Image 1 (cartoon, rainbow, N blue to C red):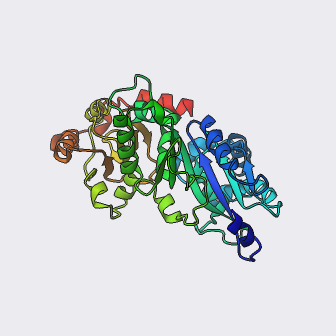
Image 2: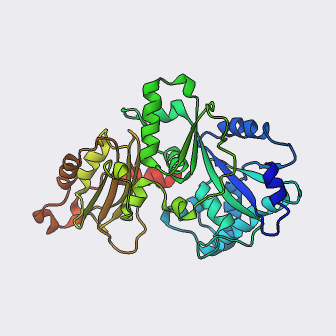
Image 3: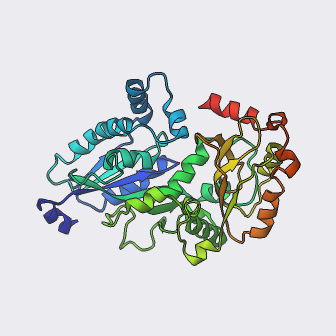
Length: 373
């Protein structure tokens, strides 16, 4: 930090902001407190998690009265003026933090009620998704703090959860795929086999992330220590599944554990529902769009993390798009997975039938999901 103190005096120096998030917010305090104890008390500014639910309600009431922020975000990117308004609100806290001339780092905590990438975009990017270089601070690192035992038991180990998926799965997915540093807590409670499984899973889901096992073995580098090499493109690209969907070049080892399934023929709703209920255990992550043949010729967004039921939500694409699904997992049997999915496609005879007569087994689940939203 001593070197950074002198840099603050430079005209172009911008205070680094470390954005810290977690699907288990109580864990953030342990990591933040540990870092603050190693630094002079007057050079760090800690911003608690903003009440994003309240902020979004106010902003949506201003620009889209009567509309729900969560539902609108599920349908696609929000209007640019919403991002701008949210950014202005959040930047007020950051502006106050750097009023302290000795401030050399801002620790910005983001809770469960917000997507950390949405917060980062609102604060640090303009409408063209270009960095706001005029700001006196910059996003330096996006750190996710994960509970190791929960990560292993709920999101990695084989098995089935008996309750429906919820926002919890989305929170874990975003925390893992958006971070450039991941802190895994509670590893003293896990066997070496479990630790290995966690390392493998995180590498597959987000190979660019630097993983820190807590308690720290190497104390020369702290996960909250400014890195100076934040990459917006990698953050906006998300994890391995999203990059595979976009046709990005992947590392050979990661590519060997990734399968992209594309078809210009819809699934039969009932056959797809059957495999969704019994998803192959080797699949660690599923993401993409599925074309399902039924009334309205619906496209659905599919998302799954670990041995859990797939989250299925209607896609808001204005036109029908072919199925494009990415699967990530160790020892994936590509041909077997392809055969399972192909068997769910409509046959030539079914293609000529009235699709509105097909039963929609997803309807009860979708109604329940929308009522919860």
